[in-house]
Image 1 (tube, rainbow, N blue to C red):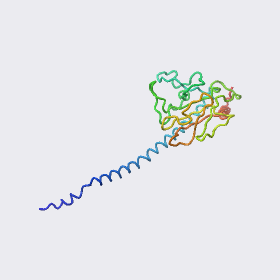
Image 2: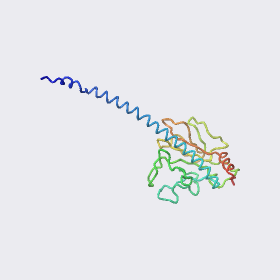
Image 3: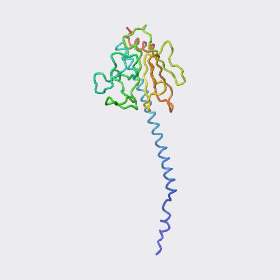
Length: 228
């Protein structure tokens, strides 16, 4: 008896070309699903980091209200040093090449949304908050204290976001998803430092916030704590 299924079975298989087409289509579908998920994660991470930056600024205002000054950056590299690690230095070196936010003094997040907490001295500082402060405001200041650090913040086109008479008292930056300081934030100037904040692009994903002298004094006066 002739196998009535033989012809049908022979036509059930896929050719190599058909299989290739199917795999390509499947890959495109998976890629199309993964891309939006990745984009959603990025949006969430940037949103969380913006919120953390605002919390950091508020914490710096609070620190100034309580202590009458702003904290110095932390430069202690050993995570096992529970006395100094994460706390601001006693004094601020004017030429400190790296400034990290003293997160323990402020009670804020140690790293941004992309950072990894360090566990040994040799670990990189990837994802830690960059922090620069005007030395004139790291000791008790008064209403007549003027900015001396000349911390300026620019946009990518060079447009200054501060004015000569009121440069930033402090600036805090995240290095973003690539965990590398971009453009102006990648350089260090011991005199008249410049930092950059702008919209994210393929070559720039940092975000910065800064504190001005008027905003700092306003917060302190509002809290009933006049600068000494």
